[in-house]
Image (cartoon, rainbow, N blue to C red; front, side):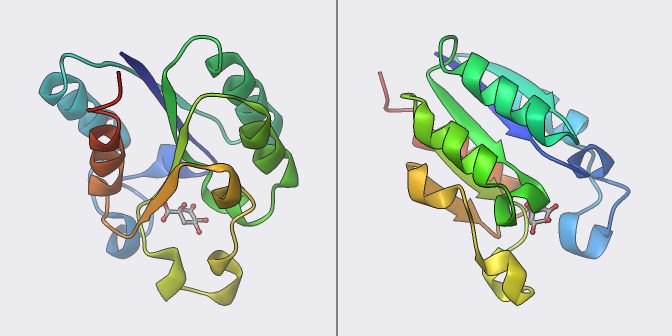
Length: 140
Ligand code: DQA
């Protein structure tokens, strides 16, 4: 099974960014651990700080992958375009957040993406991504 993790703006800084909120591990290190632990899944990873690139990737992924694990980061709260892209495709998308967005500022309580996803996992640190991977394990 092929899955892709798509990360939005500033998530390239993980490990160096607001460590109290986002932890001290880089996403690259975490991703290698996930690839090793879930060897039966073909896991890919894409990150961009640019909204249009994320939309392009979501559209492309629909013909190549069984599912998308999407952390659109700040665009979650602002991007009708990313929400529309998720709405337009037929493969399941799981929205993830490292922090518990509902425990933070009010503007982070809104997601333009969540209504079109299979579900949302928020607040478990990097483990949010692992829980999302696990949600696909019984999917054929
Ligand atoms: C985030 C939460 C967003 O509100 C924030 O803008 C991010 C990261 C998270 O993973 O906790 O950049 O998506």
